[in-house]
Figure 1: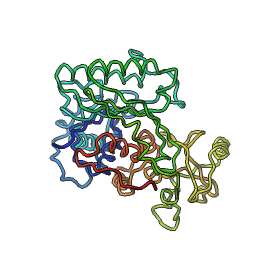
Figure 2: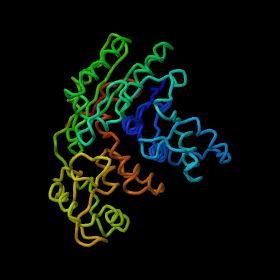
Figure 3: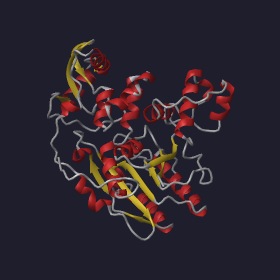
Figure 4: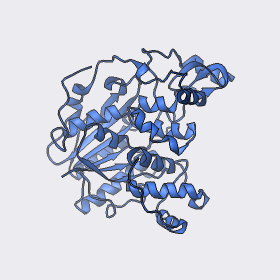
Length: 384
């Protein structure tokens, strides 16, 4: 039987992408995502080229979509009536094909399909160093406190005898810091109370998995039953020497019309604040480049990288292009190009990719969790 996967807080589906990299025998039985752009982009990446589905009338589309909560900005619920008919149609198709159950707050154990692996990458805004530090305390109403919706859901699944065999948590590294460790401890104790064994938390840097991005994220694997999967002890085998050629990720051929246009879109005016950005983040675009963490806003003071660039705005500098950002997150060029027809702005695409997970890191975690099962082979005998 194929591995049945449910992606909570799915984003654009780095989780499913990682399983595809392993050629795993798996099926995404459902996702939970309420951000309109993320749902549409997920569909574009994972269902590109699939047979079109029948689209009913606008009123029938609205009737179907109205059972879910959606958001344009990932903060507030959106009134669907304010969305253009073409967006409604995109959302209808994407929701159907991706088996989206909408906001995690609406999902119930009764409605959730039975799965073997539940991945939950709950919002980091109130935990990250770029956020406001409100935390994830139960009942606080912060976005990061949506973690406790996973607790509610698992309680319901426990009652229904539908608990997933495996769980994987991902978030920013500060989820393990002193300010939030007590809340996390309570959550992990809850998991143990319903039969899970929790592996030790892992702090993994994309740089150890073949990606020249200094991006550290926290992961915790949990397994139902008496036998613990000790991914934290074996994950080092999947790490590689930090030998990079960043030109494999950078697109510097400005004679290429498409790449030139993308670089122009990423270019910034030389305002005083952006000159300050350059002083902090300016880099040479060459094979030795290592970028900072890609965030959901690459127009902030501490951005991933700025490069000197002569383009439509003159001789200034540019951010990563969205194509490059996809590559630095472990997606392929083909996967990026599946999204081009969406015609999302730079800022909208930046938010989606900045909130994603590095595919290479997930690939090695899943390998250690599931090797020998679901068609997942042992790791190739190489460290480079």
